[in-house]
Image 1 (cartoon, rainbow, N blue to C red):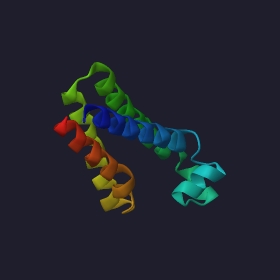
Image 2 (cartoon, one colour):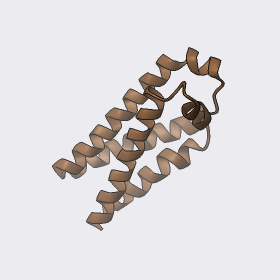
Image 3 (tube, one colour):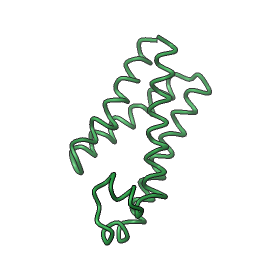
Length: 116
């Protein structure tokens, strides 16, 4: 179970690195606009806000990687909890599919970590 937990935490970290790239660097590109369903004008106007979101996603990824590299279960639990809260809040305030994309993988990783 320890290997499964590590892989799942790593996947959640990778997802958040992907979110960082989308929000910080690809927000106004055709790829970023397609992923988030944005028109070019809104994407341009909201570029700074998206970059800020991307930075926070990068911090979540960094925390998860820290937990993996250090072997500290408490760090992994804390950052997975942060991801879950962010996913639930995003689903409640922005788009319901965020819970499936962000919170569900983190819940699965958290269960695996707690069982390992």
